[in-house]
Amino acid sequence: ALSATVAALVYDKVILSCEKQDAEARVEGVMSRVAELEEEGSATQMALSQLEQDKEIMASEIKITAVQKASLETKLRALQGQKAGLVERVHVLESGVEALTSIVEDLDAGKGELAECRAALEDAGSAEAVRASALGERAASAERRRAH
Image 1 (cartoon, rainbow, N blue to C red):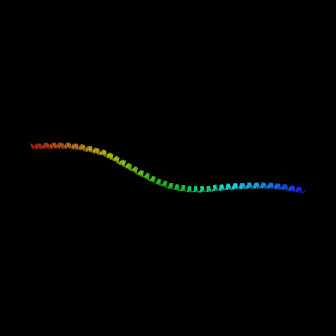
Image 2 (cartoon, rainbow, N blue to C red):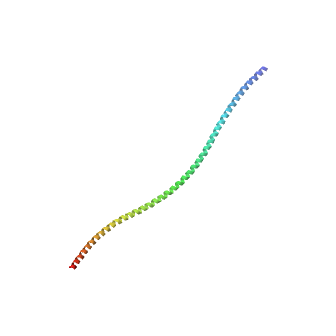
Image 3 (cartoon, rainbow, N blue to C red):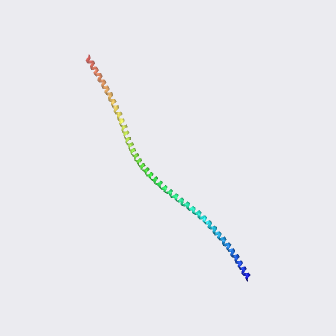
């Protein structure tokens, strides 16, 4: 009976030894997995840190873009004001061109009238010259008669 008890104890010891080795192997597996998870957690933490930095950079870029947008909008308003001023100037210039065109047309008409007046004066001058010549001849003839 003692040898059966010893055999049972040896058997139990062998089984416990196997279970111990199995438990130690599982602990090593768990520890290995914990180490892997810690590495993954570290990599994830680094990735999160990088994402946070990227987020801050993007936020800064968004602020810069907003400032640039506001600046461009201000420039656009200024250019629209300049455009309105230039459009007004164009209207003024167009009115001036219309007035000058009217003046040129009046001057052209006056030129025609002036040419007609010159022609009339020349005709009148020619007629006057003919009269003066005739008067001159009469005066010369009268002088000759007096002289005789």
